[in-house]
Amino acid sequence: MHDMNSTPYEENAGSKGAKWLGKIIAIVCILIVAAFGDVMYIILMQAHFPAGPIMMFCYLGAFTSFLATVYLLIGKSVLFTPGKQMAFSWLVLGIELVLIAMNIVLVSSGAQASEFTTAWANWVAPITPVINMVGIVILLFLDEEQLEKHADMELRSFEMKIERDYKKAMLSAGMKLRYKQMNYLTAELERATDNPGTLAILRDHAAEMSNGLLTNLTGRSYSRAAKVVDADQPRQVESVSLARTEEMSIGRLEQLKKLFSGKEEPIVVTPTPEPVTKSSAGRKLTDAEINEAIRTYHETGEMPEGWSSRRMKAYIRHRYPKTETSKHDNI
Image (cartoon, rainbow, N blue to C red; front, side, top):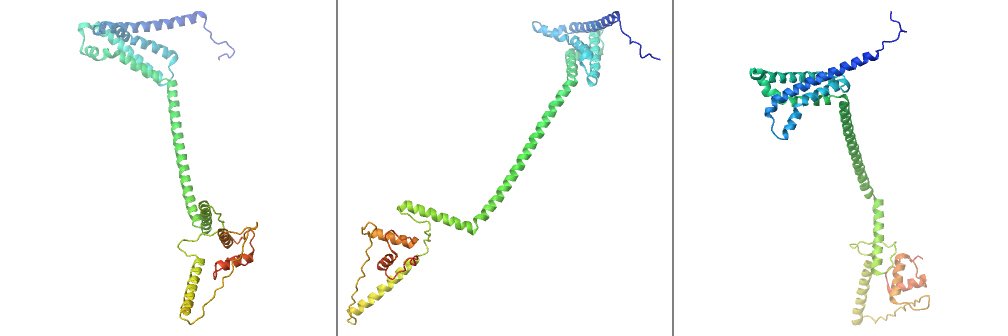
């Protein structure tokens, strides 16, 4: 039975040094073989290298197998993550070994090349650097850190997209609601405008605006209580005055006919003396001031300063006989 109190096995310094020496020898052996394969590749392809400075790039490209082998050794030791990247690294390592071996075979076969080696030399050997590059690129992007980074980028892109879609939907819904409210408001405004009370308020406002315009045009003050009369409706006072004037003219004409025919005595008309109206300062008022006072009294019922009700009625009867007095005569 295993003793739980026993101390675990500990390597001594000699064992640790031997392990490190073994690893170094293995790495050096692998790299030497890779370099030997690239040298054989250079011997195989140098006849096709151009002369001049470009030849240096051709030699650098020939050592891709060596560099790929170094990357595989480092990657499988500390870089590659378990899973797809580690499994694919074994495949790339196998392909590298096949390429190195075939290049060595092609150089050593010389004139005794078979159809297979000839096809390899014509179609596969020239693209050896490209095969190395493809393997290295796939291994690089199979790294889990790269995959997680790409997944985070995809997630952020998806999140931004659905956020934009949400904002568009909210904006569209808000605009639909605002249009609906505007339609309701328009309908209610039309209904309120057609209300008789609203129309009466609008008529009063129009009358006030008309009085203000008349005041600005004539320089006279018009009361807000003055009513607006339609142009197509004749005024009642003017109609009554014209009718009574016509009756008076016909009566006077009949009297004149009787007078000239000798059937009636001449009529002596004694004019009614015009009442004297003075201002508060004792000055006699002019016709324009008297007419303005009568018009104001007729429209508003306000008695001008220095006037009495009896004098106003007498003056109206004298100047406008057989016509209606103001609607305020009951004062």
